[in-house]
Length: 251
Image (cartoon, rainbow, N blue to C red; front, top):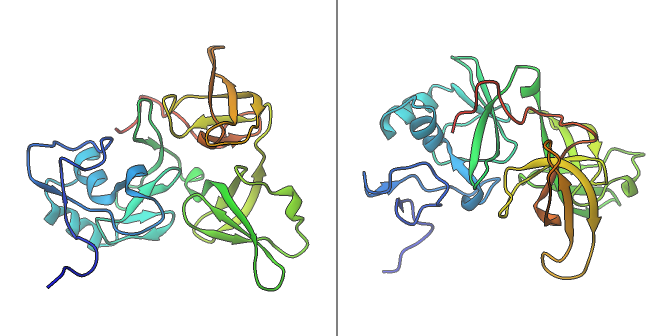
């Protein structure tokens, strides 16, 4: 009889390369369940609690922590160790009062940046799609899988794909729009320059896959180019979120 449904296990050797796991220590690791982020661009809660933060030594301890409701992602309690946590997500450990935001790491992968209580109440989401739904309302599809209907009276021409929205969590309240334009501050989310931040100097739009490019200038004055779809705007002139924690980040 043929297998039904998705596999529930994942061997460590073919797991995403950016996962900070020991490949030969054991045979299996947690498999990402369908959620807001693809497995190539996320970490599971089990990997974060066990391999990065060191709060658990095995999966049994991970399940005990999660079943008690101590862990929240974007303000929502999550109890499955396979839940995917990705770019710009806010992770909160209620018992220790620790809060982290996931950001792209230089040379690939994601890092945890410690943030304060005020910053943990919002996140940045990039607009991936813009469609008109029933009733003539405009719906924005965001990078983390969520959708947002524009309020009555809002002009849809003010919102473009690859712009960034500042969204309150968990109630998903629209707080601010940050346009992808010259002078804006951005971070590279993918590609060979992943994790580098800087001010947008020039945007060149062309037809074709990865043909459009963006020139950025980092804080040291160095300029580099990357594909347009790899750029994630984080502020109009400076970043709206903490990009590097004092004393380093949890990786």
